[in-house]
Image 1: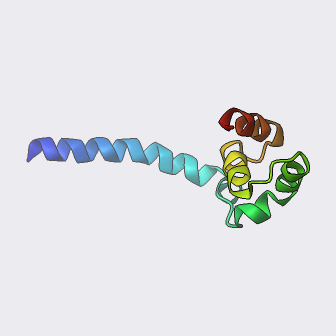
Image 2 (image 1 turned 30 degrees about the horizontal axis):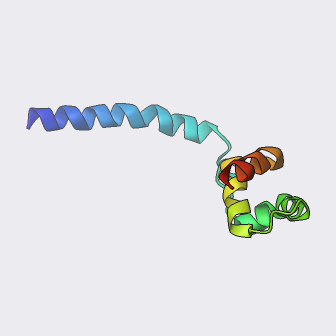
Length: 80
């Protein structure tokens, strides 16, 4: 019983600072509600212009690089 309590207490301690940081941080920017096709429309177009036709892979690469086209291109090239 005591051990379980200790574990719960530890969890609470871990989550408190994160909660505080989350409240201070601009949440909407960190977690966009728009679909990736909309968010990364410009980047997707650039990737397609460069010859990367697989939209699903392009979106994955852009999500992984937070919309950085250059990084996404490198990622796509290393995935090939």
